[in-house]
Image (cartoon, rainbow, N blue to C red; front, side):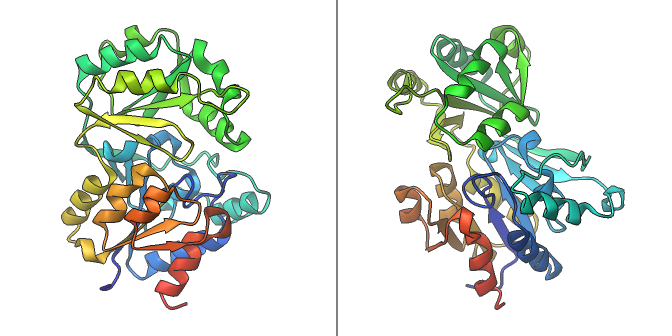
Amino acid sequence: MTDIRLIAFDLDGTLLTEKKVLTPRTRDILEYASKKGIELLATTGRALVGIPDSVKVLTGAHYALTSNGAGVYRRAANKDSLPDNWKGLITEDAKKGLPSFELDVDTGYELLKENLMDKDLTLSLMKELMELDVMPDPFIDGGCYMVAQKSYLVDRMAVSDSMKDYIRSSRTLIDDMETFLSDKRVQKITINFASDESGHRIDLDKVNAILEKYPGFVAVTGGIRNIEVSDRLATKGDAMLDLADKLGITSDEIVAFGDSENDITMLRAAGLGVAMENSLDITKKAADDTTLSNDDDGVAVYLEKLLGL
């Protein structure tokens, strides 16, 4: 491919380990790339509030693509306001196997672009989903919200404790979803599932049947066997190319890393799309190449070779 000018990366299942850690090796290669003038772009299904500080403070990460492309932000903070030892703090967290998203760093972001879901259809969809034993959490203005009465279902999810901790820490609990959404517009809805004793996602078939009634929305799977719903025009691939165009970067100058269905548009849009070893089969088929798993520093290993290190 031509010279790399942008590295796009998913977070869960891709850049971060299963314990939600950005390892020193991966961080160092990204910092090396940024010193070469390469833009770093987190492209995640998470809301802005869910992006770890360890990713937000990467030198070349001036932008963040969130909610599967429904919300694009630009970092506005002055790096001089960051603690002098922030890299050391993150490294120590990584060595301990701790997630590095609680440094209390105020990076400051401004919204560049939103692709919002239709308000009336969103209210209708949420009303139906709230009747089931699932957690439909709306992402709004960079935050994510959960009805308090649904929060007990997190313990019944078939995911790692680190993922459960992330979900709890990133959600703001509310009392009544319909009242809360009455004057708001939604970027994305993440539907998480509790599992029964056999590991089957409870009410999955009912959710899929409901979603079929809303052709204006697109539903894809994320890294934890959830379902993520957004406006049909909101995709990682389109948002990435739109931002790249504004930065004067062509698709041939982009390398992208991902593992889930919500990464497929991004992998196809990039000049070089790379799937993780732990990726879904459909994601691997959409990619140009593969690398090691997220727990084996797959992003770092691939970039080291690509950048000639």
